[in-house]
Image (cartoon, rainbow, N blue to C red):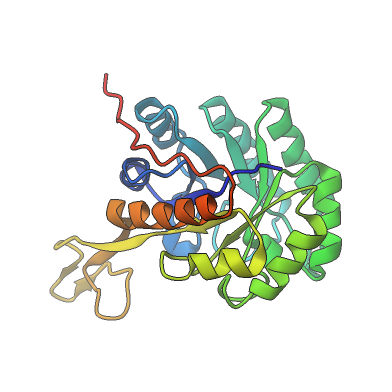
Length: 271
């Protein structure tokens, strides 16, 4: 497993990816539809990110809809096509997760996706569907046997800090055979505590800020996505928050004698 401390940023657009790269992120997870928990991004968006920031590692989400992770055969056929399409357009890995109705892994569907990913020589990442698994220990053993490289988890709790005890147990039991990436509610203010309590080396954060779109609400017509008085706003990645987050992870890595994340600012390559 990697010896580096890695700060991964959750992105929902090319704008987000640019802010993450300029803030010093080494790796991002690229989605669309973050308000639905993250859906499959478009291949042109992925292509633009890789074109402008070729040194930025991009894990592309393959998720056809919101809600849970028990997919119909028709949905999975689309997921297979999306997976291969994103890999063809330069994805460094694919985030995915398929469950059965009882919360066990859908081994057949997951294995097919892993096979597609490995055919391209890329990383297979099981996303937070893991936090809906019936038995995390059994699921982890199965994912290792399938060839999955990394698991994103909040320790089966709403936030990673709340699930830190289980994340630490999973790291102790499986960290030598699979990478464990902690996410959900992770930010610059709690990342050091999370790293100390769990022993993990990889963290996932949204580094979220808000941007105004004055056309969101007009008279009686509203296309608002946000609550809490943010009716005309939508969430974006903040370059400043990314820089602060990566710096906290880098500082922790230096103090603990491990290789640090690559925090040099990435320059946008323009045609």
